[in-house]
Image (cartoon, rainbow, N blue to C red; front, side, top):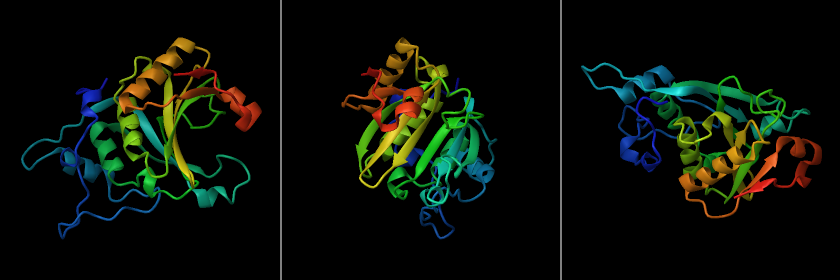
Length: 234
């Protein structure tokens, strides 16, 4: 568990409580290019978690997590799905997460076709990954450029171990498309209905999301593609 847990009530984090990237002239820095991380993560983490004369305090997460990025321009040139996907950075503390999060684009700033992932370290965000193979995913749909806050809250609930069946969670992905954005929560044991339904219900509560969401098995998605039907709904 996180030494100082990221609780659901802590998800409403204001700009004043989050570290920012500031230039030497005092102005807030521009957003980086897609998938790019600006500055040295260790330096950013240290500056955001300490004051002069005090020791740097790190708050370890229960799991290490890796951000992955699939660039739409690179995807268009590749024949095999997933061949353009690349890991960006792995973090294992609260401080590292904020340093990364504040130096990468929000979903609303990514180009249509981009996919941005956050998965437990050592798990690749692919159906073929042994941990994901027997799993599935819950999906929420948002209007264009409206998923930023829900993406952040999903990450905080996930890395802060707020789910009762958190061990079943593999990671999350935001898919940016021309007309809408989707956030999906991947799990590893699709056949365990009670665990999946619990995860779906809690996810909706954390995000205050009122629409019905559905859970699709990865096996069905592989076989039926867009014809795959929801096995569970909440």
